[in-house]
Length: 373
Image: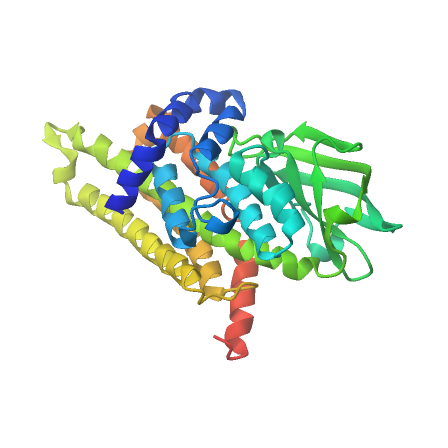
């Protein structure tokens, strides 16, 4: 990771410092970080890092990209920045895998250059088969109607990879632009990620040409292709955030005394810091393993249990880490530094994101029961 850290610092260090400078104030005000930072990052080749050279990327692979994402999250106080960047890169990767030259030229290349930013329009507080968002055939195209209740980076994105109910028992996938007639974006309120530009996305009879419809019937498999890649990037982001909390706790504890004695001399405090490091180290090891497997082509592109397990484990340990920090730091964690509040609120969102923890457990359990794992 030392080499990755040097690479990130050399290429994007100044930008990360600039983005992070106003993070706390933006978070408190509920303001999305400026879109210009996404453009600047793309101009420094961040978005194309893992994409093939044949389309203008750097071809470094998911193992490097995941580690870079982790390091950026660790180094930058604006944690929403790397999260939103990774939404665009995950969609770019998914569209590239289609092999469709039109999608690559019209979307993947503009994503890499920063001309366009993209995110996922998925969440409706319902399962796949209970969604209110529908895509209805209209000639060669379709009409999209409905509402997505919570869209990460919605206020600063141009393109939405959207899933909707189509034919009976089928799921469609399509691409929607923010300036399409009938598209409405509304700022969304949630527990965390206050500077990530969260939005409610409404579709009022949005007309889509056939070139915007990725599939009419295989949306479930298509979404799993996206989510499979997304979960490994989510785990990378989570590990970066965990490292940041451990470093902040260690820095505070090194300068704190109790009854005239450094608190790290107390066995319970040193033990808490040791547990925090171990939780983070194991989550990092597990995440790096799946990143390396992806780079070697050893993962299932539709649903990979090891990737899902890495997402599940890192999300659980991120919350465990917050509990350990509160025990070790006492009141300082609660009222002395707003960073801890941001961490807790944001990491709570990891529990339902990318597939809820329970749903991942059920799916992996079913595979074990069928002797497929």
